[in-house]
Image (cartoon, rainbow, N blue to C red):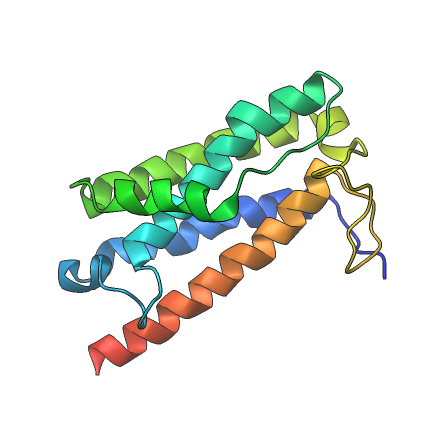
Amino acid sequence: MVVSLDKNTILRYKEFTEWTDTLNDLHESIWLQPLSEGKASTGEIISHLKNWDNYLISVIIPAIRNGEGIIFPDFDSFNQIAYEYARSGVSKASLLEEFKLTRLQLVDMLLANPDIVEKHVTANGVDTCPHTGTPYSLLYIIHEFNDHDNHHKNQIIEAAKHNLC
């Protein structure tokens, strides 16, 4: 299966900030409450998304610009750093603003560098996605991150429904 990717993939990535803006209304008492047993909290998820965007900005885009492939760090330890930051005392408003600014910076970089975004690269040494057969590119990674964002959005919405009742 080949996934259709275009500029709309990037714009959809940007539009996610419109939804995260609504999280400013989320009650403070549930911001750092795990969504369910053993799961991250809303604050931890937002920090996690911000860290991945920052990783794309600071590591992935420069690597592709230098003719290198994409190397992803160990997910668990990388995500743990984000969770710890969310629990460090940073306010909900500050973290949401940091996420939004990082996401918008990344989107601007993506839109300004179509050659880097569309270039075929390896991801951890692999040429194509094993699930779809699609050749890896930064645009394909953003497509995957859109799905990832929506997964977390649905988790947060479901947890919020239970906490509001």
